[in-house]
Length: 551
Image (cartoon, rainbow, N blue to C red; front, side):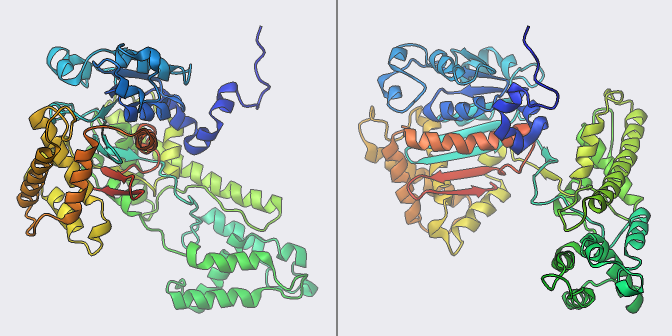
């Protein structure tokens, strides 16, 4: 009988995935393990992306491809070997990728996107599909892209020679855990009664000399700086008609006031807790304000009208909004505290105050959530996840909502946002270093393939020069269509030549690096953590540069 690990010891799974658990935690890992990725096109780049998703343990993957392995594949695709020649590319890639992680279920389908959309559309129907995310490798004709469901996140990748692009098409994406540098919110300008009472109790004799019954040097030097700031803020208010230090000059005077109260006749000549208090003035003394991301979420139409079909994210968001509305516009407290000079007992007591307030605020939000869900008879009203609400409250001032544009939007000639971004990049003073030219050339490649059924520069075709002239013509028409008044930029011509020279082929070195870039964004979308790109990233392997665009 196998023995279980001692209580408190990490499991074998936790040991195996230790590093990534530090990045996105158990919550993110659970989401990752529920994902089922469909890869359309077992290309070198596609296999490299899957590799970087299989290793951290997605739940399942399916490789969809209808080609047989050719000699050219062996030179660029690490996941196809000599024994694969002449065999289905989907089958061989799935088998070799599956060896990377036995925890991941892999499969394959000898098919292509056009056939699936025509003959088995249910495979991609959002109501019935098993796939949670679609990974599409170019080339794919534009009409097929336009038939794909908007409800499933799609990652469309071009990889040509030294150039790679990723475009994300997805439903509205909400993020709770963006992993900011700090979650600390000390509420020094808005202390709650228990915190004010605790500060008053611990600092009542702070400025009394020891000889007159005040604190000894050791105790004085170990008062947490949070309590020092609360004490001296009260003193400041008494001498400034109840006003708090808000401007830079006022905060500078406040810092001087703190330094004047520090005891200097101690070993080293300074008290570290006072230095910490002074250093915290500029950052921690601030009025509570909603971040721009949280404002967007709380003002979103989804947050205004709660129904039985409303996603739990928006119900909790509405509850947080209601909580703030009845709490002087203050969001739930995060409960996070920084390290500081203090005795363990004093620090823990202060920490418990912040945690108790955070739990109290989260409990109030939970009551509002329950009320909304019961009121609209939400199907999940009996499955409310308290941990999810507490997590939301802890990160409530760091929420994000990303609205991705659809495939139809990108290829529409009337998309003013798209035109504005491209024209803005072309008119930028640093346009020569911009990668917008790569996007324009790749867009021309997409149109060329859609019209000809092959890549420009394909060695099976007689004249690469003819293909280049066609690409050039497409670029000129596109620029004219968006209102670009000048002649074809030289950089566009250079990138167009590079794309034709690639002939639709991949380079393994580029594919390997692109695999990491794309997989990173896929993981952000799956785990709903960190902030993914919105919506396009270009990689230039010649200049070793990346750039993102919201097109």
